[in-house]
Image 1 (cartoon, rainbow, N blue to C red):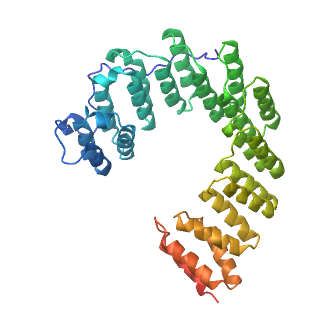
Image 2 (cartoon, rainbow, N blue to C red):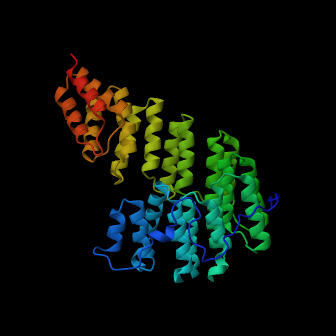
Image 3 (cartoon, helix red, strand yellow):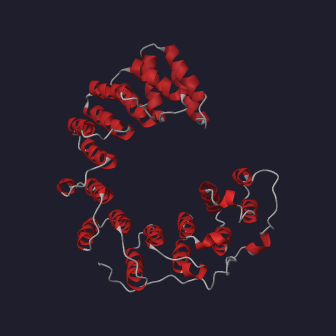
Length: 401
């Protein structure tokens, strides 16, 4: 379906054993340490190590340590830091070596390697890993295909994506599922070909693959973000008519769209509908509705929604504090802004510099010097700290006559 271009397959690696780097750096094999006991637990040492070469050697020494290999965070963190140091040769050596070990016969583990290659920006290696799975005695299924497809969509190269889909479905007998189609639809939306993304959904139904709430939410969000209101609303109605009920993410997409169009009351009504049908709004929903009322000039309504958030047992996050304090300052309500700002800063959540400036100016204008000094004192305790220039600017507001 819709995949017409010639196949462009990435070159496979010669064999599973070819794991040494072919880059311009010194051969990776020279850096490999023999496995040996460590003074501290391996996970602790991996987390603390900052030198890329030592990190590589440490991970390699524990290549068969289940506490390391089965720890998703340790694996991802190691690859992420090596990628940050641009040591892609180390990443290739580590991951290719992992394929040759017993865990390389588990599809779930190969899926992790594919995703790790993707996160490191090594797309070719990720796709070759998918194609070479049989070399390690690991069967390909839709799970590994979806992982490879997800990595490939990050390239935003429509021709490569379509070629991969053609080959996988025609030569490898892969049968797409809902998750596969959702990856394709999201990729097409991000590329900007919304009409084709919609046609994919239409075609998937003809093939017996039923769109789910993620399918609809992805398309609704894309059409709303491109100001195509009629299609976005039409998809919402189609989703409900087909018995696929919107979830929290779908409602938040629509609330965001209404707020963007300055329809704050409709956004508030939609939040009320969520509660009536058993979907609890989250901090994102509340923040959007608060922002909508603030932008529309209904500060009292924003404060009522903020109070309702507390009544429901939610605690405001830094975005909600930022929104409320910014608009309270604009509305001249500096006492309430000060109370919120103090609570926020004591949690080590800090507003943007412009909002702090506005609050300090307002407190000074109203001769609340003690409160202004308290805000500056709390700002000085920030971790990580504000720059010396920013702190000096805060102090200068207090010192000006």
